[in-house]
Length: 204
Image (cartoon, rainbow, N blue to C red; front, side):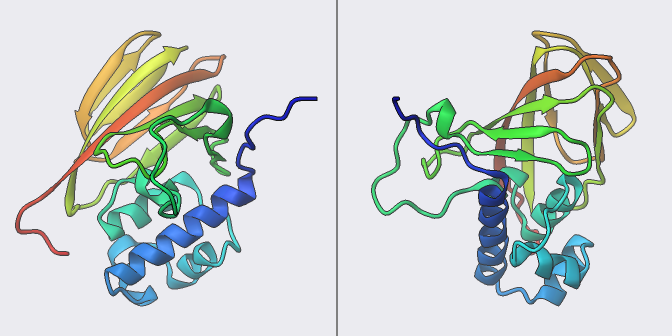
């Protein structure tokens, strides 16, 4: 029987997130208390995340990313490779993570470690799922495009709601609260492309 590349188990991805949050916090010289103040996530909850003792929700990851001044995609990064990174990420080896609150599944599409400002992720969004982010003041500007591959979703940015069907693509700058909803009876699937740029004069 032929073998295929191993797909990350949920515990593998949880461990990756834990290591990444811990590394980013230390790089910035933040204590647990400092990151708690910046992110709105309690010190004890951050400690659990960093020890892989709890699986954080998408909302918690968004808050931690805001406090660390990175997009959420950065929290799924692999450790720096010992060898030069591969420009090809085979589907069977792409890391998958399930949000314990909404049940949505995030697949990291972009090749790990590849030097590029573009991050791609594929989302499998269950029927009835809702994920709402209370986007806070950020140290980076996040540009995001959402391309629906199957089904329909609603994306609310600030006071405006966009209903997207298969093939539709929404471009937005994530500087207001944003919510994703699947009000249909069937799952949806969409691709998210993210690019960040620094904001001059903000805290670091």
